[in-house]
Length: 292
Image 1 (cartoon, rainbow, N blue to C red):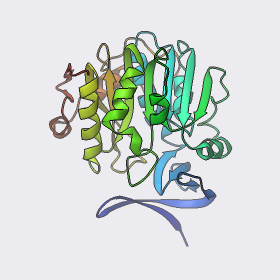
Image 2 (image 1 turned 180 degrees about the horizontal axis):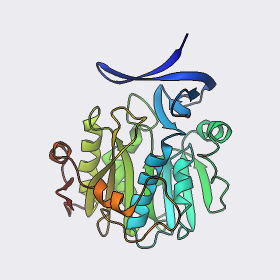
Image 3 (image 1 turned 45 degrees about the horizontal axis):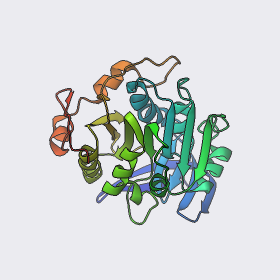
Image 4 (image 1 turned 90 degrees about the vertical axis):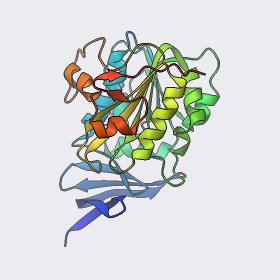
């Protein structure tokens, strides 16, 4: 008899994957953690019953979250990753030879340890000498930064703000104020903001906050097949120039990202452009000057 993993995407809608076998199931101090081997999509990391990443399509999400902001920045030297415990985002960031140091702040040590054991392709770069991992709350880490400790690019790869999950503190106006203060002049920020079909309030909330604290704010999107609806958004903010076009080219082979896809990703369907303030409309990002 077939075994299926079922995720409730929204009232009246669910997504299911056929499970070949369970590789790990446990509970950390913060959440339940499962690793499944699926009949399709390969191995999957599931946190609190929500699909986070699969080996067969993770490259789309991680390349778009890493390369769009990093290649829009003229010279990213120091990068901060908040979350990202599966290691896939750090792997993509460390492909950039301009990057000299990466700080990854992950609240849940067990996620990293489980990923190292069961998702080795995700965690292949965690031994890079440019990377330092802190096991701490990302919002608290930002609040405690010294005034002279700044980053060129900050990436937020967290769980969705649901229930009492560990990602909730990473979607508040206070968080974005501290995040802005942790960026160098001209710094860039990007964060996953979920699927607008099922959770439009997430991207709306984030864009509104980012527009208050950053000189430029914009939404971009990609297709991630393993996420409910397939249509997935990211929100970016910049203290300098716009993020909607690359300033440099990737010097390594990518699987999904290209400069053309970078530009097209900021062209939003009208239904999404109308629903989020300060979003990209007609290919031209709205520039805002609400910094505080």
